[in-house]
Figure 1: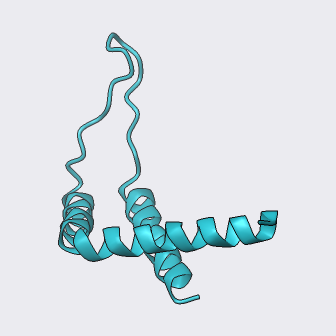
Figure 2: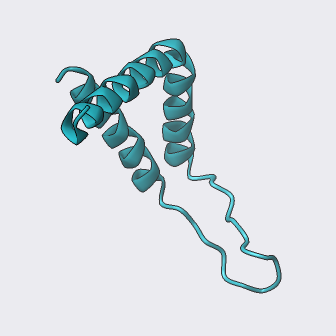
Length: 82
């Protein structure tokens, strides 16, 4: 088996696993996105502390999180439709 054939077979397996995961957990994924959007709209994301103490809080931007999730969803669908 050549490297290209092996890579193609691995791609097929990964695509099948991703499709199965998305199909199986689509409601949970949708709920996660909806909750993330709701938190972003309310603006009540609690700051994360790295190691405690008086270090500055790391505040993830909600738009970045939602954008990343949407981008991941778009990429996954585009790969499934290839």
